[in-house]
Length: 126
Image (cartoon, rainbow, N blue to C red; front, side, top):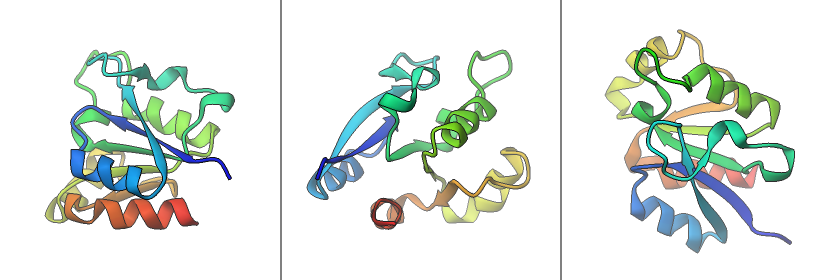
């Protein structure tokens, strides 16, 4: 069985990344186009898709005039059937949902950062 792959945006908690490695996943840096952190998220294709994509809200919600928007990231996730785990403090979930268009697609999961590894495990096991 091949290892699962997890793409992560800059700033992802090293403890989460270490936990993913311990679960048997490979982790790969992904760029939002602003930070040049890794492979640009818009360059993902069928042969390079991830089993999970992880980001803090501020890494997918771009400032006005940015090249890549959260809608672009949602599109990539929808097309290549990649779940997106967005780390947002629990008390801000309602605000985050509003900022991301009011209704989240079924492949997007908001999670408190303290629960991110458990949420990732559940997504990867499904």
